Length: 141
Image 1 (cartoon, helix red, strand yellow):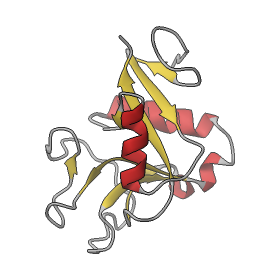
Image 2 (image 1 turned 60 degrees about the vertical axis):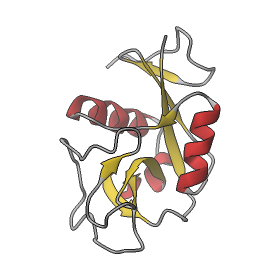
Image 3 (image 1 turned 90 degrees about the vertical axis):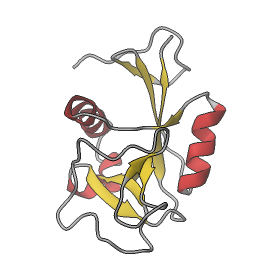
Image 4 (image 1 turned 120 degrees about the horizontal axis):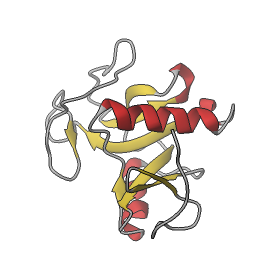
C-alpha cells in the first residue's frame, strides 16, 4: 500500500486514503494523548474497517523492531459502561474488531483501547492512566 506525505498534513504525518496519520514516538496517558491530537485539529485514531486496520498494522511493522515493543493508544474506550466499547467521536459501538486472545480482558481497570506490538498490533484493553505511544488522525483537506 502506498502512503506518502502530501496535501495539508503536518510534517512527519503519513497520508492514506485522504487521511493524515501521526504515529507518536512519545508516551502519554490516554486523555493527554487525545488532547495532543486535538492540538493538531485531529483525534485519536478510530479503526472503523479492516482496510484501515491493515494499513495501520503494516505501517507500524514498517517502523521496525522498536515499534514491536510499543503499545499505541487509539480512540475508543469502555469508560461509560464496562464491556461496551465505543469510539470517542460518535459513541458508536464497534462494527469491526481485531481483539487479541482473551481480549478485552474485562477488567474495570482496563478501559482504553490500544494496539499491542508484542502480538502483531492486535487490540487490547489497557489502563487509561498508563503511558503509551498513540496514533492521531485528521482529514487531509
